[in-house]
Length: 176
Image 1: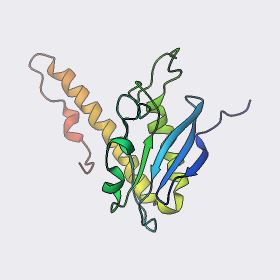
Image 2: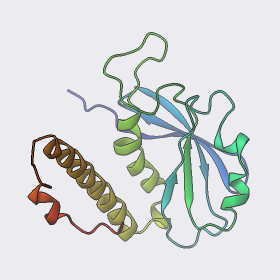
Image 3: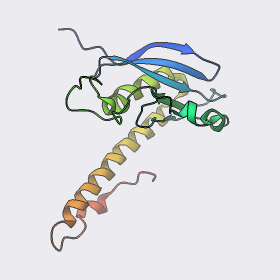
Image 4: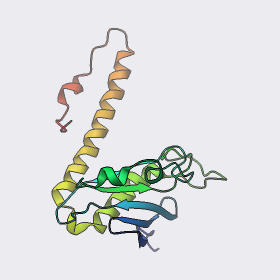
């Protein structure tokens, strides 16, 4: 049996020297997802990637970062790549349990956290250092750790007379 296709850049369209429209194939949603990519003026040094999510309309309703803000002006002197999904109306960028007759398959969390970051890193490989990828991985792991601790702390407080869980003291330092 052949392997399922991996996430990949399907096509790009250069809008200007810093702004590119990119289409990335999502295996979990089995379609191309439109993205707006903004690069810094100086692309000679490694930089992090910031993912900006549009509101409830997913940017499809015209209420998006590029139309409603001065994000391009703000980013003019920032050394950061920015990726903005240009779809996802009323999915709230989550994974839905079932396919919706109007929306279709909504697996946005999977796309944004598992499929897209490696594609973006590969697309900008010469400009993204191994260290910055490692830092992003560490932040994701620490974020999950913090989430788990919040959940276990809330659950333990529901028990009469319970104190903070012992695991709380084992929390790693995450640069927070």
